Length: 192
Image (cartoon, rainbow, N blue to C red; front, top):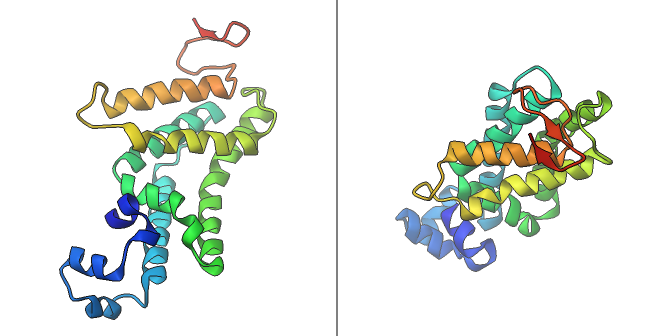
């Protein structure tokens, strides 16, 4: 996973992988048919882990509460697994069509939860969105970006980043009813 994340799938050889795990190159084939199978298994495992963990962490309540849960879950889960996130999103282009379809279906399952939250909130007048599907893709992209720059020894802690991103997402979806008692001033673009 680390080699694929840092060097890219195309640049990594089976010989490099074997050296990294401490076996002869030929011994790798006792565990995986080829590099494509290895990439697929890593991506599939990651996506299944995401779905299982999200199922366990899923909250009920208002669309706003569900959205907050999703945002904080996504950041926390992926900051603990930055290489897996990078491989799962950046190496899709290197999957064979059948493998791509499988991983894309798992990603859709995950993204569909966010789209349902945004659609529910829009239908209830809590969010102001023209297109919940486009908003879903934009929010996922924004949340994925955290792994590129966050450092545990940096200026802010993970919990601070989760709160800041939650505030940005609330404003991005045009939230009109904030459950924490604050008021969103949509016409001024400021928080009071």
